[in-house]
Image (tube, rainbow, N blue to C red; front, side, top):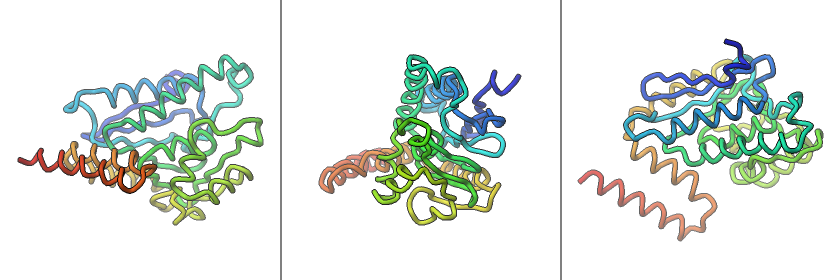
Length: 245
């Protein structure tokens, strides 16, 4: 079976699921087929019954790169209706990642550009090889980011980093982004998946209900004022405490 016939591969090892973008000859560029398959796999994983779903999900790319963004060579790029169809899959993927009842980790090597950067930023932890390159090239190819990159960058790294990446389109290495909040863990090149897998194995030993509460707090409290954030946290605290009675 070719990569085009299987653009995303789902594997499971115990309580950890791995989704691998599988178009290595195109640096895992997002075709309509890839996004559709990714959305389908995410729906299967996130909507499964509590006892049947993983405790943690790893998102990675086959070959040399994580994801180089939208595939500008497929017909959808030049047809507005087809681009709208692809965008619908894109937004479905991001909604599923935000709603996932388990932690999602991105293991990044090579390129994480445009939509690939957005995909990484939609994860709860980003683990990257030091030479991995992050960037937003959209303005240079007649587009603007459409998957929340600017919002995610402002939340993670601040307006200055977001503005620099958006306006210049510069590709910045994971090593250079250390400490900015864009990347959470930096490893030697070629070690991102192994490092992310070690973290996932640790998480898989924790109680699934507590992991769900933890990721909900991470994703939902950042935009709230302190009073509302403490209220959200209090609700999860009582839920966890009651579950131990």
